[in-house]
Amino acid sequence: MTRNVSLSCQQLEEILRLKDARIKDLEAKTGMVEELQESVRVLTADLRQKTEELENMKALVKVNKKKFDQDVSKLNKTLEEFSKNSSEMKLRDAQEQYLAKKTGRKPLRTKSFN
Image (tube, rainbow, N blue to C red; front, top):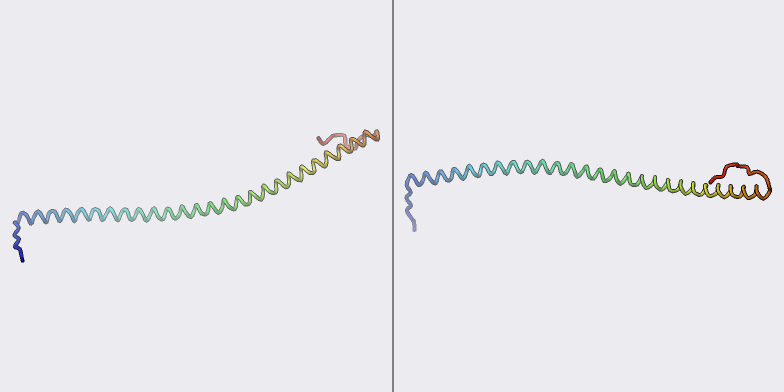
């Protein structure tokens, strides 16, 4: 079955006008999509760069933390050695003071290490 469709010139012009409007709308939306795609490309590149910078910073922090831990360890050893030496000096000083009193002579050092 075939239908004969007859359209008036006015109806055809209206259809063409609607199609032209639709085409212009699609072209405008296509332009917006292209702009958005470019923005996404730029943002993606920026994100990659920032991610790389962050990874570099993480690596630097890791290295600095390792060095910091080593420095703290050295300082703790130094402090421990100093404390040990200080205790030994106080003990020697006390022994010297005791011997000086016991023997009645002057101590070799006149100042106490306290």
